[in-house]
Each structure stands twice: as structure tokens, then as C-alpha cells.
Image 1 (cartoon, rainbow, N blue to C red):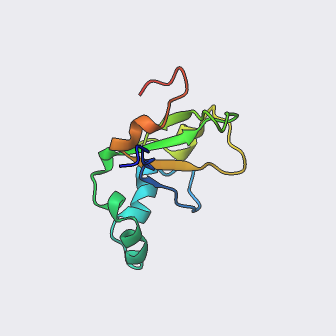
Image 2 (image 1 turned 90 degrees about the vertical axis):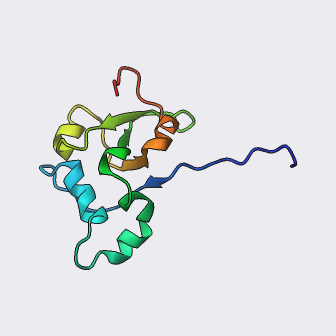
Length: 116
């Protein structure tokens, strides 16, 4: 052992796709993680997310503006629509939602005032 600590990168999912503002985040997740004709390749790549119960997946949106050295996040409600989740938040161009396994939740510091 050389005394150095290995940096563990949290398991995180970023899927770029168009989302309806009227769909719940859970419905949008289902498009990628549930079994559908033609999505076996993406499901295989997302196996660590597809094989866990949905309530163990945590959704975050990075707060903007925010320091890249000390990012802060909003916790999102997977049962609310995209529009409801984005209400009152700053988004540049399009929202990027981080989907994280529950075990990595603490690696995403919440914006002060966010209750989760």
C-alpha cells in the first residue's frame, strides 16, 4: 500500500433525451430502465440502475449559478412532472438531471434550504 486513497466515483446516470414537461420523472426513467421493444442495449448499459427498485434512485438537478468547485443540488421528486420539478429553478438551455443510486446520495450536497 503506497498510502494513497483511491477516489471513488459515484455511480450516476445521465441520459440525454427529450422529456415532456407533463410527464413525471418516474415515467421518463421508465423509458430507459423498463423493458421495452428495442431498448435492450441501453438497459444492458444501465444495468446497475435498471436492476434496483425505483425508490432507491435519487434524482438531482445542479443549482445554477453555482461554483464548480463546490456544486450544490436540488433534490427532485420522481413522482412530480418535469415542469413541477423545474418551477422556480434556473435552467440554462435544457435541464440535466443526475440519477444516482441511494448509496451515493451524500456525494451530492443539497442547496441550503432544501429538505430531503
